[in-house]
Image (cartoon, rainbow, N blue to C red; front, side, top):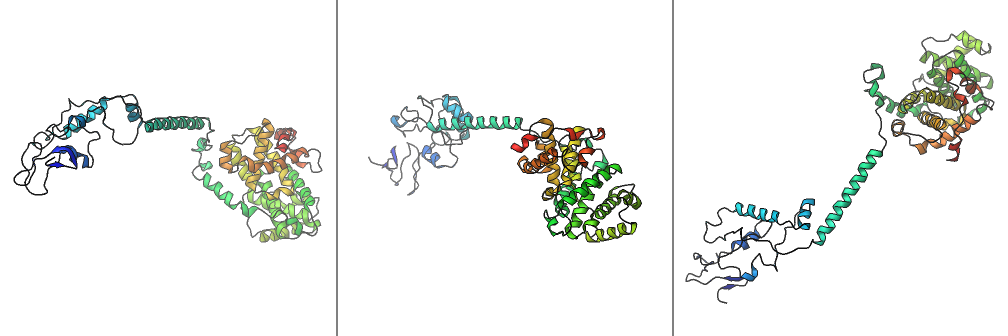
Length: 436
């Protein structure tokens, strides 16, 4: 065909005398290589072109068989991100939004009819015909969106069922003595510094004249002395800590072991108590086995051996915090202290750090009272020990509880069998923990 363009089938451009081509009956384009193309072709090459084909060249351009509204060539949607709304429009064959977008495109070219070479846009004649089935990728997208919604609902249900972590300091925000602003930092420091208060769990092997059984007898006796003197709880735990740290560094003869215990209690009283027992009272309680000079000499040796480091975290400081996290009542508190004081006597518990001993004592006490394992998310968050890390220590505590009444060292059991301590020693041990 004369003047036909292979790149634009159906588009006839008659040659002119100047070598140009007439574009659909309009003006002649002069100059070589400046041939005008149909506006519909140009629009397809423009970035950001309309999302749907909407321009119909009526000026002798497209044959009727290539018209956009042909049923054999339905308009294809632009590949944009598949949203739920867009998928629903295709699935339900809603064609109105397509026409609305076409009108918007028409409005975006207000000068299209002013140029003789521009194609006119007749929105009214634009009809989307044909019955389209839902494309496969849309079906897959809908299935994916439904799966995401289902997963979101499951996550929301898990969040609702998950045990919340309580703010245990909310009630103390107006109490300046509770130092709520610094309490987490304080216990983070305790946890970091507790290694300095620990001793090698086999230090007794370096002692030539004493053994672990003698240590247990000494501490069991000191628990009774502490009870009779009505000293603070902190004093007892610091006393035991000073004894172990001193014996781990200094060899002691058997006949001096009680002197070490009495002197350690004197130092702990000076550190913790407001009213300190006098040396003569301690000599009297030890049946005058030592003189005042011996007690003072041992005091000098002990503080120099320990390099005057008496500020160490003991299990007591962790007990107070973890009991608060457990929302404990008086019964749970007394039973927890009963269990951990049983551990003070036992040499094999030295392999556990103070924070773990405190957490395990509270866990064991909760299991004893409830008959099942209990360890809340709040307790785990503040103790920083999950339940599985407490089981080994907790099983040992149950065995200590079982033999507390029938063993040779019964000082702790007698103490906690009184009304002052709520008869905590009479609780039935949590035997089921031994089977875990």
